[in-house]
Image (cartoon, rainbow, N blue to C red; front, side, top):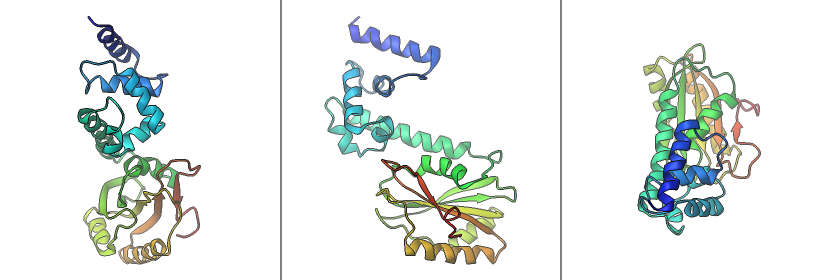
Length: 228
């Protein structure tokens, strides 16, 4: 058995025994890469990825071509990273159920950021809630270009009525990371609030998610800023 094969076996056994608590980020990537790089030591590649991108989050958010530029990383590894991120989104969206209580903008943001952070294009999502502020449904309503995604209030109203929602929270990401509400953001929020209130549905908040890189604040809440 080659030395790296024995090492692969040991890190897998270590993971199965105690999970990844306390691991360095490169060690987690090293283990992950063993599933896409079958006959090679993956430690050096994992360290190169962390050196280039800074963190596991940034690796998963990175463009495939940027990932492929790292020596030793092939298409199988790039696909694996994207698959891991997409599986996370599916898991979190399915995990949000009627037992979850949305009590504040930060609570909503914790969930929404995991779905929107790192997206290359702007997306608008809607969280539909019952009278107790517990989620009924989560939907991606629209996806646009890097700096613009249109929102159609009528469509939001139709979906809210379909799910018998008493309230909604809308959110969209700013792929460039800027956390401010544009005049267009303010106008569409006002229009949407008026549209849903006609049917006794409350617009609880409009949250803007940044890319999370280098910013102390991770989100902008219309509610917290007194704009709603």
